[in-house]
Amino acid sequence: MAAEVFTPPCRTIGPACFTIELPPGLVLLTANERPHWSRRAAVTGGIRVAAATLARAARIPPAEQAWITVVLHPHNRRRLDPHNWGPSAKAGIDGLVDAGILPDDDFTHLLAVTFLLGQARPARQIALHITPVSAHHTEPTPSRTRKASSPCPA
Image (cartoon, rainbow, N blue to C red; front, top):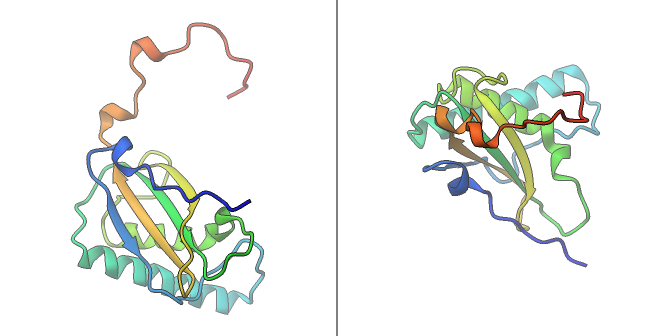
């Protein structure tokens, strides 16, 4: 059965959504790779610089908080795990911080990072969908807070 292609939930989270598509064919890192530290640093730096340059060129306004959806566009139709490209996504997010889109990529500024599988393209590509989230979206309203204790330890 073919995997369903999802559209990033940008507009349902906040009023605006900005997209940065890293260059097709850019060398990416996966969580399964164990490259030499110098190769890893070079690839990470390339992704980081590309994301920062594209973010500046797109004139994305700075945001205090954001939700980022990472969409992996594969180059073939084999089975894969989109979250396996987490190291590449992290480098791209660091590039957004370098460009001044977010003050930092800690939990107070980056509320969530989700991974989705996009449509196949001629060359593997990652797209970052940045959704600025206003402060009123982060705190639950009193009607939504739990009254009973939760079985979850968190």
